[in-house]
Image 1: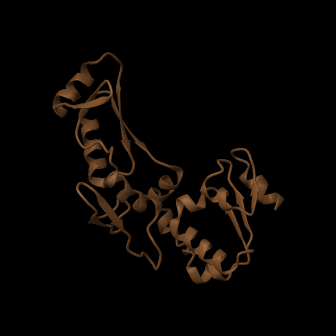
Image 2: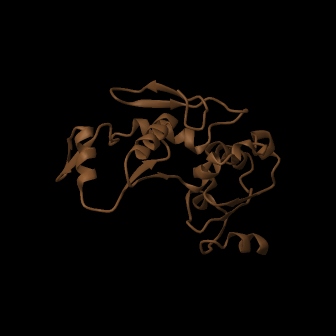
Image 3: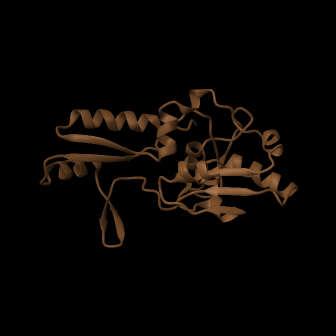
Length: 202
């Protein structure tokens, strides 16, 4: 199968109704966060697979056409269809076509900032991927944001380097204090939007 960004992704059975993502190498590296998250999304135990209505603490199956009609007849000036940006391109196209056919309906895609840049063509920028060999030559690392969560391949390279050279400094600038901050030797606590000022101070 293909992730929405177009990279091949292999899903292997890992039990009843469970799948494990097997990541192929792209340009000698792993997949971007979008592809990495797709396998986890498909294997999630609480993933909603069919239309349903919440009844107390359980979900009751409903007919999709009937659900659409009930939503459309509800009071209000318009509808917003909220779609996770991590669904296949075919689903996005189908949702967009459905929204065009309905009066006063807007389609909204939920994208993380990194995902938005991916869709806008950051992958076509010509920027080079950091290889393990490149990371091995570094004397230290300055990480802006939650690099480890956004790029597992890069995180592995840094951890491999740190294993060989335990005293390697890792400076983390992240207002949200994400995953990378937990492994920082030097952590700069900043307010959101203060990344540029923190870099200038360095």
